[in-house]
Length: 156
Image (cartoon, rainbow, N blue to C red; front, side, top):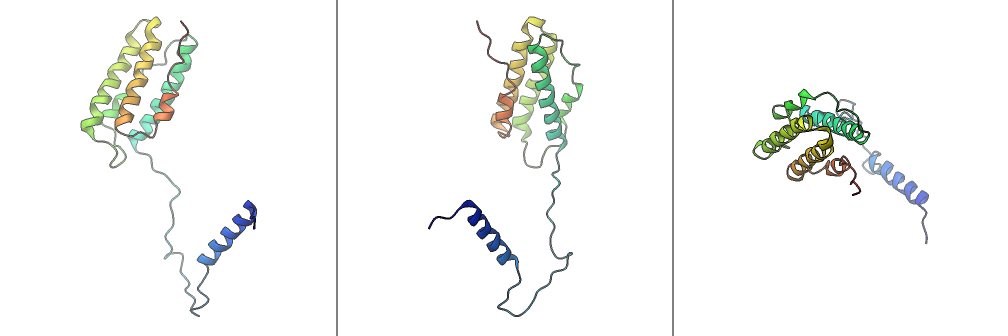
């Protein structure tokens, strides 16, 4: 017998409702008050470090587009130095691993602003490489997004 997705979806819903309904065989009805039923939080709390890294991603994306168009750099993001002290998501950062990458990133960020304009795309790519290197060791989730921040390969 062939079952369509609609039929299987309907069957899943019936099963879900059956599992969540009162037990008809016991004869007893357990009514739980709203206070007894735990509520699932739909709010996701973002740590200050995670938010800072989101800001760093927006900065990198904007900088990539500015450089590709030959425009000037955005103002220097002094708040990025907070990555050394910002509170992280619990259990996500081992400072023995993270801190050397953070210092290297900040050094490269300084370099991006100090090099001659003709070297900025290279300096930018090196900055993104530090992001990827750190996330390869500490928190690999954002690597796909980080790799999209790289400058397109130049035709020689």
